[in-house]
Image 1 (cartoon, rainbow, N blue to C red):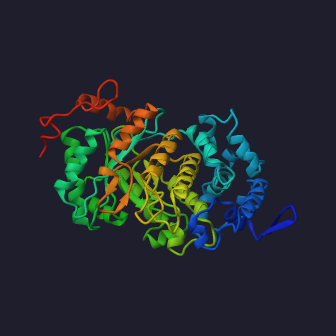
Image 2 (tube, rainbow, N blue to C red):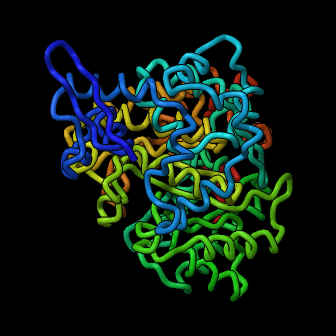
Image 3 (cartoon, helix red, strand yellow):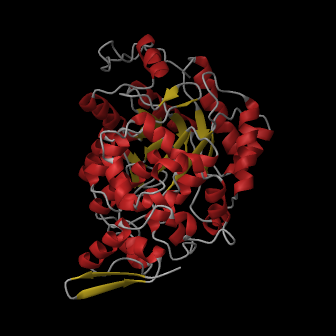
Length: 458
């Protein structure tokens, strides 16, 4: 490893290694300040960005930020690296790569071909040189399509995870939220419940109730109960109708250990879900959630900035060919993303990095009640990510998750986004909504009476 120097006028800035350059070049994040990694001034940040712009992409292969000898995630990223896919950019610096990404010649098909040749550290690096509009423009050209009982990620479509959480896992409360969401055209990404209690019996009960609804009304969607993956596997062994398996993941081996997982467990989970063969139009079976700051919160960040570690989590996700991946961007709290400005920047970075790596990225546009943010900030980020081509968002009753106690996006927000950007649900789900007289041929919602078959369901 070697140090780096950059001078601005009479000031000379020293950076001890590549990790230090990456951290100092990052946009301001409270988590990086908490870790003692952030730039001390805007001028130092610019100096780090100038250094970073001249670093060859190859350097991230030659100088891993975390030694593969000590970290299974680093080993995975290097082992899975597509050398042939990298050839078209192997002589680029990070600055060259930014210019290439913003060129007219960089099309959706070119980006798809390139994805496997990029290490997460490379996409994190280039994102640090980009304005928000750059992140939006490049991400909008990245198309990642996945399938289970419907097809997500197609152009001019946006999907919604219907999130009907309840503080006591009450069946009636959850059922009311699901019906409400369906009436607003939500639920095509997944009907996904965060259980209040992580035990096998509760997971089995919740999965069975959603599956009964899906089968009864032939809804072209999939279910997920977001318990720990080991709990879901036990429920599966006992005959629970598991569609999509969920797990939170992070960008270092030690952070994943703090979640009670490793790469071998994720492989076991994927193979178990594939063996059920419950998909009808495809068989992508994994759902991952991530978030900037998770490694630092577990004291497992190895002196690496939080945005780079987030990108490394996407490298883990990519290995398992997931159906859904999303950043819970403001969920971890203001200790890591302090205010609406930081949350907005992080959301755009996360979506850009995930899409560039070939992932079906969504975003939980959210904040906790002690953050310096409000619902106007979420409206802004939701709209920006919609323009950027984000695959899916959350649909939470009233935008207020009464079990997890944080603020997200609502069923109404989903309908707003589809109207303002002229986007539709997943095609199979769109046809079902029209067949059920929930959505008209103009893709607007229809008035629903109390005699609607969904509302009559018991």
